Image (cartoon, rainbow, N blue to C red):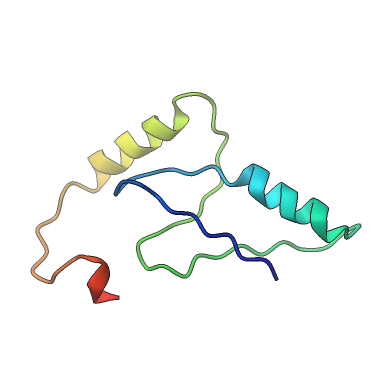
Length: 81
């Protein structure tokens, strides 16, 4: 099993991990198999997308429109995990 650690610099950030995953798969030298990817953090998500230039910004804009800033009563910071 391989672990990929990614440090983001802002709250809403899209990181393309395609090359990193492909590199790990090449290093494994398996002819075939299954690649399972998961995220252990509660406020992170994985998705598949064709990241043409600007697609990441369009995706974030859509999320901001669909999920406006909510005013939670509980603290929503890294300490709650």
